[in-house]
Length: 246
Length: 246
DNA sequence: CGATGGGTTGACCGGTGTCAAGTTTTGTGG
DNA sequence: CCACAAAACTTGACACCGGTCAACCCATCG
Image (tube, rainbow over all chains, first blue to last red):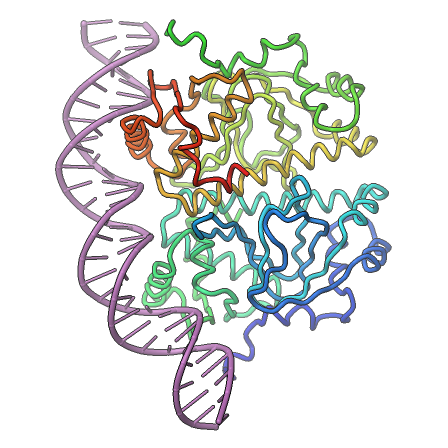
């Protein structure tokens, strides 16, 4: 364990950056063109809660009264079929904003993968603010568009890529996300389990495991420990996936 | 051909409903709470163009300067990989509005399946209008959320369903769409080719063909002609897909 | 008419899923 | 800190779904 101390720790990376109180609201506001006064307003509105790994933060289909801002930790967004099959539609990292609600209903559930801190921003209050400051609306719209784009990338992946390509693509995207979130490192801790990866990629845990093993044997990645990832040559991994990286 | 005259003709269903000039703008406005004056405003802004089957209406990655409103016909939204693999992310029917543009870029291409009429609404002008009347913003947001929801349904499908389930699901959704668009009929014309269906479902044309053949033999559907669909018992087809139908 | 393109059907094969055993890691209580 | 149990992960054998390739059918259009 001690040999991986320099590895990015998603669950701590963000909260150690600034002051402890509402320190991610600047991130949220930073996207828009309007300035710091919104941050103050938002800070007053929001409540932060903590969840342990495995807990459900919000349920698919529930009335959604809040937007969510992830302050630390990693979450998964899930949809279940009645027979238990599960699709993970996305992973959520610190700084991500969840703002969608069709008919005021959550379109998917949100579960904590690691321990997480989630900032709840009451929907009606933010909406009030938005109606006063149209530039905030842009922020919300952009957040949804960003998610739409991500979801469509995943469509292309699930519909057209084989197992090798899916895993390679996942590793590339993950590596990029982890680099954004913490400091870029050659090694990064994979926060999610094989089962999570499998349900994200539409594969089984066995197939994920096999592909990872193959990539390791071929020297394209190394896994010094189960959940520690080191990518030798990122370009080699995703050179044929340029349309995603765009 | 003559025996299918009573079948829904998507390409004509809408335009025969009202007057010929901008008659779909009420549909667009009808979603929001604000009234008919917007329709007039929009009508003045928009230009309608026609395309033949197979033509490209807009390109993936192009600068997007307009929103699109489909007046008649059917389109497909596509993303290509460099090696030619194609994923159809959605089919577009009359009345559908396309409003998204990440970074002012189209996230996918739009191609005509049948002959189509498309109403171009210049983006900057609608945006001006939106900033004056916030209730119009709702309309745009709702349109994006609707697409996001649809895309996520498809994720679940591509990630978790097998070939039989995918085709059954497709038929159910299609049937519903066709019923919404035209008058509900027992028989409906399938506007897209097997190749389109295959690329939408992440399968091959052979597999689609085989599954359809199987469903026909089992008496769950009948295909009196290649592209004429008649579903015996819709519930039987999608009873295990309730989480989609919601 | 024949040519062309879309659709169907069959034979075969390979990639993934399934099932099961074994191994490593993690967590817990002494 | 160790011992043990539980969970997560890996690996192998095998089966089967769906892809590939090829032949054929059918409708449309010159």
